[in-house]
Length: 90
Image (cartoon, rainbow, N blue to C red; front, side, top):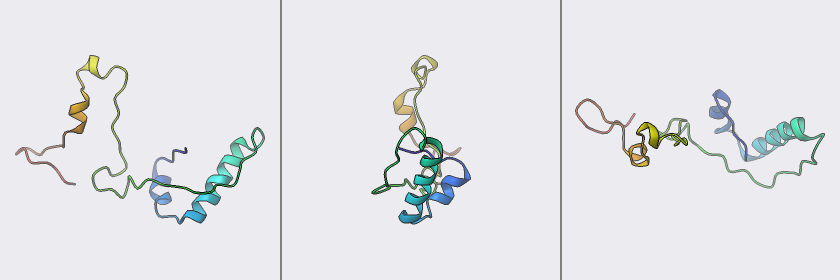
């Protein structure tokens, strides 16, 4: 698994799978090639979080202290609402 963040993540979503496999292999080889033999990647499955209008590249998570701070899992599943109580789409 690989995490790509910031502007490169937005760019990566538009790459074709051949270029993405090549570039990911190059990065893994750069950082781990002296320690491990990096095999040729057989497939990649990139997320499209930035392109998704419901996430726009962000995600929510619960920390170990969420409940102690009054944040419950059900709250993270609720839509963001505007001043009139209607769910916000953008």
